[in-house]
Image (cartoon, rainbow, N blue to C red; front, side):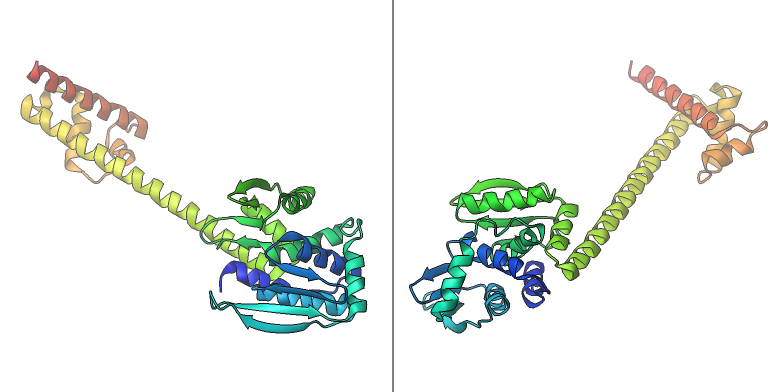
Length: 302
């Protein structure tokens, strides 16, 4: 099961104890958000079908708790695609008329709690979220601009900083910030998924930090090794070309110690001198040796 399906499953199966006004906001989201979720309003019944099993569960839950009505559910198979879809029927005309009336209430998503439940139903019906172990991306996809603008305004109202783009014939509201995606999951009460998301996000952050540290240390080791080999070559070149006796006493002492103790650190070499010098002092003298070797090479080719 994908992470996205896990979130929808959590939301559909753990609807929570909410007021009727929130349930109506969730029902409004189901009918308002996507033309691909067909809703047919007749004089005596309402019918809806969807391939989204989590949406079917959520729709049934809302009707049961908001209208004390359990819709008839038929599972059918699309002949062309072979995929299952859920056909749900509200055959009670009284319940159907109450639903229609409720969906025409302009204040249906005025309260913060109702806005959250609208976002909750919208996630089940229209959203997807990538595996947080790979990257951070949450998006709501709609077939009409008005539905996208409602979600964008709701998410913006909760400071989740969404963005909107047109993709072919659809409108996409998306969030790419991991922290904001986590906040969105908490906002719609997907707490188990939020904890899982946070766990993966922390693991990913720590792994990235470790990788950066290892890469940095590896690069530094490679740089140090390259500098060490280069210095050994410089000292060897001077010795073969003119002899180390051409060097001043301080430089000759450093060169001889470097050849005698190839694995010693700069600090250790500095402590071997009399009087001892600092690590930066040793490094300064070694640079002077490399400059002399480079000048000798230039003279040879001049």
